[in-house]
Image (cartoon, rainbow, N blue to C red; front, side, top):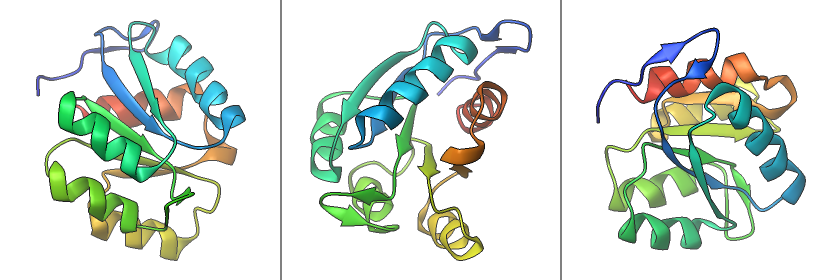
Length: 135
C-alpha cells in the first residue's frame, strides 16, 4: 500500500477504499458522516457480519477495514482472526463500544492496528487512525 497523504485542514487527500464491518445502521451512518469530513474521497463498502466481510475481501482489495467486535456471527477478537486468515496485510481498525483495556489488548494481539471507542470517536481520531494504519 502506498502512503496516505493527510492534510489536517481538509483531511485525508487520497481516495481510500474502506470496508466497515458493522451490523448497526446508526453506527454505520455515524462513521460514514465522520469519513465524509476526514476522508471525503473515501469509498465505503458495508458488511454486516464477519462472513460477509470475508466474502467481500476475497473479491476486492481494501486500504483498511473498520471492524466492530460485536457482530451476529462473532464476538470479540475472533472476527479479527477470521479476517487475518484470508488477508494478513490489510490494516484493521477496531471501532467498539466496549474499549476496556482487556478488549484493546486482545484486539491488538489478534492483529488490529488500532482500537477506537465509538463513544470517543470524532473526525480527527478517525482520520489520524486511518492515516497511521494506511501508511
